[in-house]
Amino acid sequence: MKPFILIVEDELPQAELLQYNLEKQGFRTSTVYEGQEALNRIEEELPDLVVLDWMLPGLSGVDICRKLRQQKDTKHIPIIMLTARGEEGDRIRGLDVGADDYVVKPYSPKELIARVRSLLRRAKGAEGEGRLEYANVVMDLGTHKVTRGEEAIHLGPTEFQLLRAFLGRPTRVFSREALLDQVWGRDVYVEDRTVDVHVGRLRKALNLPGSPELIRTIRGVGYSIDQDAQSS
Ligand code: CA
Image 1 (cartoon, rainbow, N blue to C red):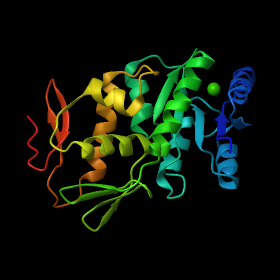
Image 2: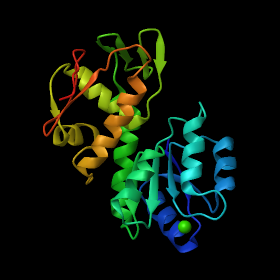
Image 3: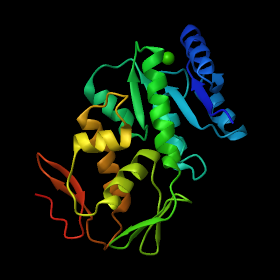
């Protein structure tokens, strides 16, 4: 089945160009032009991925992103934010509200499609089987469920793949470059800072009250999962 991509973009020519290119590459798409319409469409049919413009009339891309991340059935939908804002702070803010990736306008359709593919791969998780375990964290690769002790841990697609990398080699220190290669793949350019944001999100999701910190930061080197975590 063709992956279903929802395009949320109020500028008609941009939306049409995107739709044309995505469909040419074998995706099924639906385009909406404002925020509430996007939420309605998602309620009708859960997309495999949302391409979400930041600046929209009514609800902004940031509002929609937050809403999707708050609801159980939409929490895991991969989101790529389109932003006209070139400032690094603003771009990172898109990630902070829960987007998985962002593309700065003007962008090339080719770049966007590479990112769509990379993110869909992460979301599918390379169809693993079996489970990974470290300390009291268990990851079921078949069902994509993660638990720490008795608690279910809810992770976005990128955080899931990061944890998967860490759990594959517990206590090993991964550089940002190694994580970029393993999680994002080599066909997209991602800033190091993006890795930090997602590791931060993973750390927050894993931190349960009373449980010891598991993700260790080795300053200037990278990250590891280590139950004797003491960030240096
Ligand atoms: Ca816009």
